[in-house]
Length: 311
Image (tube, rainbow, N blue to C red; front, top):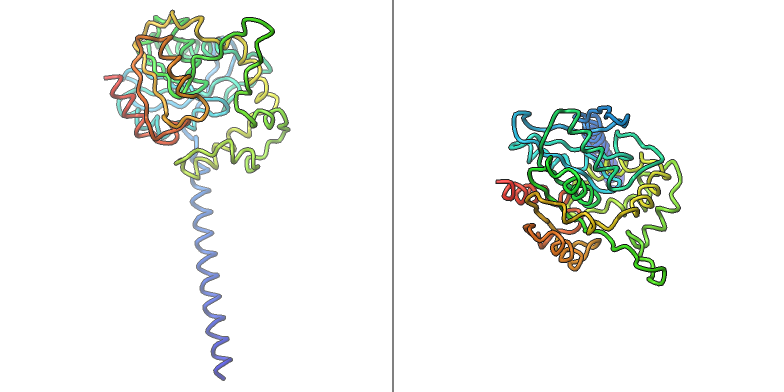
């Protein structure tokens, strides 16, 4: 009898725990579904004068100073929503999907820094924005530098975040080729095949960003996986054309902020010093505890640094 009673008690406990677990899973699924349904709902598209479709997110009051933000390689406007919402309290923030990314067109060619920068210029033209603050992270930082060099009259202030002045051009064939941009992950990019699995080991490592909300990470893996494998490679290869930004750095006249992460594993402290040498009028700020993905790791800290510079 005691054994039977014990069995019944155990059965009831198991059933209650199972019911609780199923309920919790259902609630988590509902929450994820709700986030999924609203994630990126702010994003719109516009056709530029060159025929390119560009995705973008607009945040803040249109009467306030315009600030355009250019994202990194295989990221998109959505990866910077938390930062954009913070800056949107004081600025008209325009987060762009650069060509090949997000909701923007994905042509086979071309993906040089000047192509990206010209798209940004046409975007401002479309909305009649004559001048704006220009910010960019990683690849976007290289594009922002290019924009400021070729269209200095359109830039109020320039903010380059977790980026580089680029690789030096090889002076002769005897000089060894530079190491792969992303180290061992370059080989995995070369091997990517469509459809790209957003939950693969590669994609989880690619989006292994310290401090990033797991739900944002989940959706951004899917955002990157939407980029065709050939476009991942095209952007990587064509980006090598005119990658030495030292050639155009002297053209930059706008007040400039160079914002670095003290733990950046992609661009070294020496890279940071080199950029500061080539843009000598720039203000340099280092957030010691952050890595390469500063805007995603700590949007509040980055927003505070940008606001202080823009004041």
